[in-house]
Length: 202
Image 1: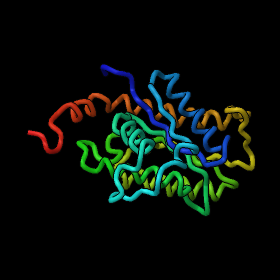
Image 2: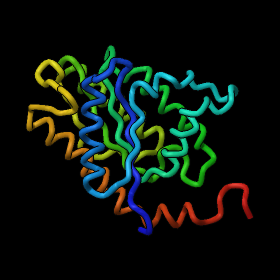
Image 3: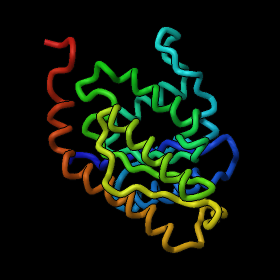
C-alpha cells in the first residue's frame, strides 16, 4: 500500500449522543488506532441528505462527500438502531447513495470490507436488524465481516463517547479489527483495479 487504509463510518440517529453513534465512533477510533484514515458520517449529516432520487441530481454537498469517501474507502463501518425489526430509514437512505457508484470499476461496496453494528432495545430487535443489514450489504456487493456487533441498549449504556461494559467494547473492537484486517488483505488488488482503465476510457 502506498497510502493508509481508509475507513468510512456511517450511522447514528438524529438524536445527539445516540447509542448507535457512540458505538460507531468507538469502532472507528479502533480502526484509526490501527493506522487507517477515517471519516464518520453520523446522524446530523445523514439528516441533511435528501431522500435518494437518481433523477434529482447529486443530492448536495453531504451526498457528494459521502460518495467521494466511499469510493476511496477500503473498509466501511455501519451502525444502525433497530427500528421495527430493521435498520433506520436514515441509514438506509445513506446507503442508497451508493447507487451513484454503480458504474464504477468497483461498483457499490465491491471489494470493501464492511463491519456491522446494531443497537436496539432487546435482543430480538438487535439480531433481526443485524440480519437485515447484512442482507443489504450483500446486495451492495460488500464483504460483510464474519463478526457483527449486536448491542442490547437495555443492558448497555454509552456516555460521553465511552461504554462502561468491557464486553461491548470488545465486540466493537472486534468488528473494527476484522474490517481493517480484510481491507489490508485486498488492498493491493483494489489498487490494481482502480489504477487501471475505468469505464468509458480507452
